[in-house]
Amino acid sequence: RHGDSFPEPEWKGDIFHFYIENSDIRIVTTDSIKNANIEGSMLNEESFKLSQQVSPLTEEIIALQNRMKGRTKEQIMVTYDTVQIYVDSIRKIRHDFIVAHPHSYKALEEFTSVELRKGFDAREAEVLFYKFDEDLQNTANGKFILDKIAIGKKTAIGQEAIDFTQKTLDGEDFKLSSLRGKYVLIDFWAAWCKPCRAENPNLVKAYNTYKDQNFEIVGVSLDASKEQWKNAIEKDGLPWIHVSDLQYWKNEVAIQYDINSVPANILIDPQGIIIAKNLRGDALNEYLSQLF
Image (cartoon, rainbow, N blue to C red; front, side, top):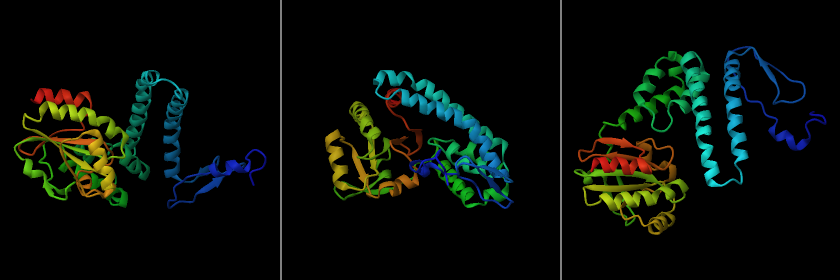
């Protein structure tokens, strides 16, 4: 019973998450579930202490975002640096927690989202991962992390790009290695992805500038609808090679390259070696202008 202080509409948010581990755990509460205290669990204590450090910064970000509602784009952009400072601070707190708790399953959980984020250094991640206790390494989560690191090492800058074959819009087989001898930008995108569509004009500009200088783009779509995929290509005026298996996030090439968010891209040289990753906006144009 919640009493008058927690009317029924608020019951949905009366939630308390905790870890079950091999210890005697006691949960004590008076007025609600969400305000419970938990005793007798090292894992929950570690989780609580980490939350105490991160939550104030998260709340600052949310408050800042709420203040920006209805503001102009220019006003919102001014706050970007402040938000980034908070984000970087949170990331450092979580990273330091991982380093300081090699015996903790909570640290292993944090590892997945902190150390395996987009563009992570697979070799650095591997060194840090092997500092965990062996029993943690052998958990399902530990094996998942090892798989991610293995893919990261295969797709790191300096490695030969993984070859693949997928269907074009016309249903023809296209093989990446058929472009050997050219600089190739593999662009992972989708018709439903607004940031991808916003980036497309920049790709068109780059393509038109360098297409006669041994440069090609291969768009790998994470769409599920051929019609939406085709319409987006036509509407955005994308004249390069396009392939997809129309399997959404289960696109085979995306899985091979461990693509978890779009837009994402990989630049390979004429020998098929990965030389850059995730070049967008000015960064792409600057890199290509130096390259050519």
